[in-house]
Amino acid sequence: MRDCNEILPIYSTEGPRVRLIEISDRKKAVELIDEAHANGCRKFKDCEELNILQRTYQRWSKDGAVKEDQRPLAERPEPKNKLTEAERKEIVEVSNSK
Image 1: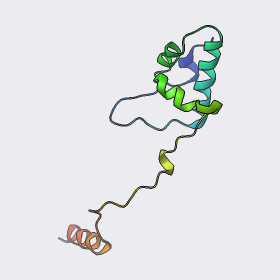
Image 2 (image 1 turned 180 degrees about the vertical axis):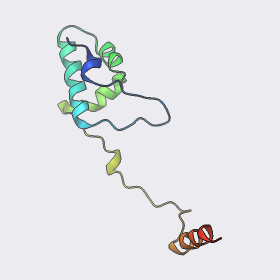
Image 3 (image 1 turned 90 degrees about the horizontal axis):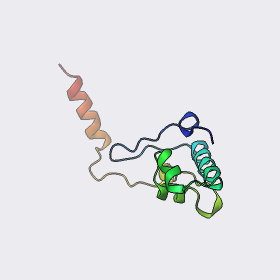
């Protein structure tokens, strides 16, 4: 098997949120893990090599198809403390005054 780090970037899991992984990268990761598994490797070791959790692999490859990230499609409510347009204009006006 080719070196995984040459094909896929190591995914960073630093910080409170994990960055979005493109669907093409997800498909490539699942393909590499499946290929390694078919050649006798353990899935948790394959996932470790790509710096993803085995649970992430399971979630991506659920039902036999690689899933696209649904976070960008989520409906998020407007914050209760969001400034009104009048408040925003007033702040801009005060900020720009001498």
